[in-house]
Image (cartoon, rainbow, N blue to C red; front, top):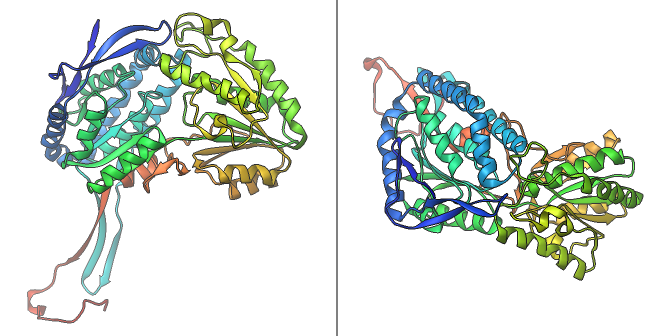
Amino acid sequence: MERITHYIDGKPTPGESGLRGPVYDPATGRQSAEVDFATAGEVAKAIEAARAALPAWRATSLARRVEILFRIRQVLDAHRHDIAELITAQHGKVLSDAMGEVARGLENVEFACGIPQHLKGGFSEQASTGIDVYSIRQPLGVVAGITPFNFPVMVPMWMFSNAIACGNTFVLKPSEKDPSASMLLADLMSEAGLPPGVFNVVHGDGVAVNAILAHPAVQAVSFVGSTPVAKAIYETATRAGKRVQALAGAKNHMVVLPDADIEMAADAAVSAAYGSAGERCMAISVVVAVGSVGDRLVAAIADRLPKIRIGDGRDPASEMGPLITAEHRDRVASYIDSGRVQGATVVVDGREAPRSRESGFFLGASLLDRVTPEMDCYRDEIFGPVLTVVRTETYEDAVRLVEENPWGNGAAIFTRDGGVARRFQFEVEAGMVGINVPIPVPVGYYSFGGWKNSLFGDAHMYGPDGVSFYTRQKVVTSRWPDPSTSAVDLGFPSMR
């Protein structure tokens, strides 16, 4: 049985607690490895390694930091297929999807390679007679990231790219369900020349998370995961005086108007709902069919579902892989029954797909029609291949539906009417909006984050917001006077 260890101070570090967790191959259902679970003491060792590395890394010139970041980008790019294979083996998503995850993660490394541009301050000469005022941005210190199972590479890259580029040192606590990719990242970054202690990895469960939140040396925490955990982490870490960005759950709506191209909308809905088996925080989980479009749209979506090739993600023919664990698969499947009991129409039951009855954690694509906001399948974040369809009479009803939902991660509209599309982006209560684009994940030089219960904290993740999150501003007021002009003045400083 493969044993997955921690990565502390530039080298793999076996755990000392004796506690370990299972890691599965979701395509077969068999355990493939076990991962060490860190104690609070072992987490402290990783944090101390980061703290010890901080003075030298912070003092490293921007030119040298950027040189190392370019090499990191080059090494990660050269190994992108190896990284993707690890994602597929432990998460289950198909290899092409895993390759896409690596590519989107690398966008953030590329953005960080331009960090000198983003760390430039302002300068005001002669703000007062003989006085100049300027601003600089400085790193926070030791920062930490707690990342989810569904993107074991991309989300860590969202965090550590800007964090280390800005001069911080980083401690990563990845999901214990698919931890190997983070170890490969650490090894490759070391190969690229990142000094020991700048990037560390500790594995584990709530013990490790709580140790990170409680440690006084950790200045900031980034988190991506479910809403209850995000809220708890935000409240705990902010009480401890830490800076926090916590991205939480979602219930992303895709509004389809009667003038939309129905075939294009159906293609988009299927792609956005069932890609990565629905285990995406930006997956479309609700299609809002407006007016007369409902029957045609549901029929078009249902016609596509039997054609989705479900299988082992390592098989190039597979389009959708398994879910991460048996427990998660069973929880997702339970919404099919609860939807039927509560009045929804089960158009396609994914449990009837042939692969769902074989080994592995598979569940076929499911489609529920005539869902209402009171049903569990609408109210809860399912996080799996179950798409619900809600029907509304008007555009206004559709927008109100999105507004009244407690989450506000993403929303999309499909229409040929530019005026309505512009009205939608102006009115809709969501942090990321797609116009004829079902998954509006921003590119690396913008920032990612939702509204309402989809985000706890003030800063979105990566891009310009990421730079602001991982730095603090200092304003310097400078004067080099002639000593002969010095005098005592008890008046309040004024501009003159």
